[in-house]
Length: 164
Length: 213
Ligand SMILES: [Zn+2]
Image (cartoon, rainbow over all chains, first blue to last red; front, side, top):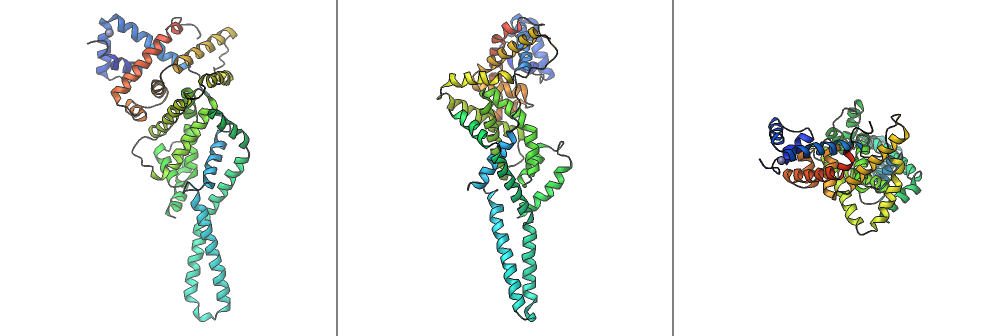
């Protein structure tokens, strides 16, 4: 077997993913090829040296910046996700308005017509209840906005830098 | 509307044991509108992603910016997420593309300037463990780390990405090939060439083994 065709097996031995067949192939070749034996040895040294490649920790403001960017998208027209709670807020307002109007109307109207609007009203109430978690989401969004203010200046700086 | 109800269910489900929930389950939670699931994915991949990008672009601020962009893209694409591929394959594919594009665009910028800055930026960032070694030993360790970094940085970009994904991420050949958009055999030869280059560049470095620890 020539030296180039053994490379794939050598690589698999190097990273520890070699199958039994690959291990055998590599060992057999190395046993009768001094060049590849040396090559494998120094490949292993290089592989181990990579354990010492410097790393970094994300800055403590990483999450806050990401949330600020998510919140930015929420106010921008682009994403539908953060836009829909706001759209639904309008629905909630509409529902609440209808409830109020119905209540006024009911208080003015004679009791005979009650059944139909009562059902309507309960549906509207249900709509409000159903939309409550959206209001909670809205709170989360507002909090994201609060975070924008915190790292704002530095975030701008860090975003500007790579563009220099 | 139905998304909302799913989100509440998912919220209950995923707060049970978020540490052992699989990436796919978390991503399905994100898709269903559960912010906690996004937080969990963020906690899991924030550091690996920032480190990968830092080693690709060698600029701390840019690495964080690109990592945030990658998470933003995941979030934006959540509605169309389908659990047919490993989450990390998807995430690192986004990140690798961002890094390669950033580097390509950077070639039009004054490159030396940014490299100088990376150099300076990073001096305190070398997180060599304090093993109680002497000052000389630590200086040697540091010297060594810098040389390894230089050797990796000198690799062609795609080879560098391949090595970083192969050596440090728990990804198989098929997954890395998918991330880099090449065939498995092309990836293997890319990797082998990269390690060959590294072993030659580092041979002076590793010619004196047994030093350090
Ligand atoms: Zn050989």
